[in-house]
Amino acid sequence: MKRADARGFRAGVPLWVRIVGLVALLVLATGAVISAILIESSRSVLRDEILAKALTTTDVAAELVDRTIRSAQHGVRAFAARPGVVRAILADHPEAMTEDLIEFQRGNPIFDSLGFVDARGIQRASSAMNRPAGTAVDREWFQVAMASGQPYLGLPVVSRPTGRPVVPYAVPIVDAHGQVRAVLTAGISLAELADAITGIRIGPQARAALIDRRDGGRMLAHIDPARVMGPIDQNEMARRVLAGERGAMESIDTRDAGTLAAFAQVSSAPWAVEVQQPISPAFASIDDLTWRAVALTGIVLTVAVGLAALLALAITRPLRRLHRAADAVAAGDLTQRVGIQRHDEIGALGRAFDDMAVALAHRTGQLEASVKELEAFSYTVSHDLRAPLRAIDGFSRILLEEHAPSLAPEVRRQLAVVRSNAQQMGQLIDDLLKFARLSRQPLTTELVRPGTLARQVMDELRLAEEGRRVDVSVEDLPACRADPSLLKQVYGNLLANALKFTRHREVAKIEVGWRTEGAERIYYVRDNGAGFDMRYVDKLFGVFQRLHKASEYEGTGVGLAIVQRIVHRHGGRIWAEGEIDQGATFNFTLGEEGSS
Image (cartoon, rainbow, N blue to C red; front, side, top):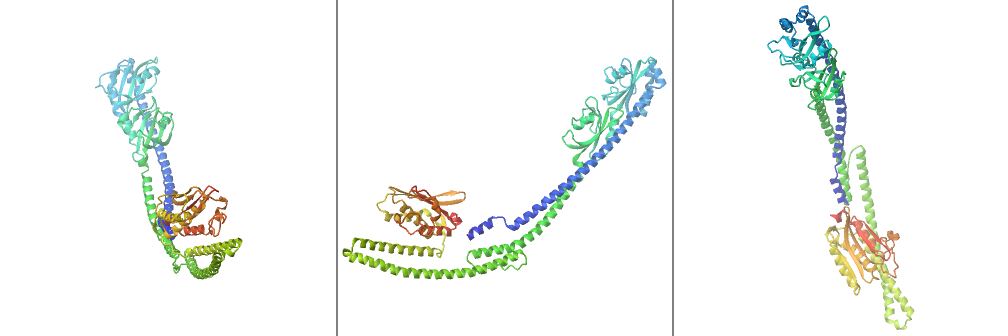
């Protein structure tokens, strides 16, 4: 079994590798958990800080827009209320105010253009008179202003006088009877609003936008000019913006990228300011922290693995010495000692092993001496018993041969019984000696073919079975490592038993085969003989144990005990299966040696 133990040790993962692996796993797990908690905590704190800062900045931007729009609206209303403007409108000469419009625009760059539109929707005067006069009848802002008679901040449009995007602010001019005579329209420049809004800086790649919450949401100012006057993104943040809410949250932009966003309403207009910052650059410091944590974990892991390797080797070196010593002792070298000079558990184990080896060598010496004495005694007893047995058998034979005519039939029968018992006693002595010698016989394994041995044994046994109908099937058994002489004894005893217990069959059927169960190779001998009662199967392999009467089947009851001892010496096991009058099957394995 030494070879199997050594091979199992080499095939497994060494203890020092497992210790180092366990330490590495613990360091990695601890580092990962601590890093994850630290990074997630830092990420959460930074996220809250960015959102809070973004919301504050958004409030400031909304207030800026609110002041700008209020100022612009106030200026337009004040211009419309000038006496000269009112007289020109009531006199139906708005063209007279062209220079005033131009001068007003120069002082208020927030406006893209200004103009007067009469009650019919015809543009009568404009700060951009180089453009041809047009009509505003179809404009939403004109229609609302005419209908309500109140100033109105319209939806974003492209200015007809300038061709640029604006938000029109319309102020009706009414006469003494409350009738709208003209509308002063001021196009608030979206470009100017964009410059003011997008110039706000709150963080890396952050961007601000101005949204008109009407008509499903329209973009008034954005860092990307192509999005101006276009629809806003439809997401959870857009829903909250259109609902007039104020807040901050994580969101998704048009490219499905994560952003940190804040939004606030402009109090003087149906507008909202929105600030978004991409998550990746916002968390760049967290990413840097992550890489630092990974680097630190790597350094700690390297140091820990190195220390663990040194510790593991300090532990496993003496264990390897102990293992090699155990192998040597198992191989029969009882002089092996570990000699571990340590004052810890491993040192105690080494000293215990050395003490055990000393005790084992002493006990083995005693046992060997006892065995030699027993062998000598066995040979002496054998010799001393054989002499009187031979005398009894010899004189009984002489009496039967020389004095048979003068002997009564009963006397002749009794003498025959005496001879038979003397001969059986001699066979018992021979079998006992054979059984005793078996443990001392050296085990020399080599590659053998069991099928060849079984056929040789069967050919020898057939000579004593002349006249019987015996059907023997020997399969092509796989080669195995075993002692050929001992394995031949196994098949000799099993096949002899099979022939003996099929004696009363018209046709004896004996099968020699093999099978596998998992990784185990099982050889067997099966017959259709007398079988046995499975209740007594444990007695089969005992010395002198018989399950059948001696008058029916001869034998000493030692053969199966010999078979069991041979199988055990090969590291295998043997067992039997049977049923009364239905035959028996004897199965055995040969351990790892036999399977190689």
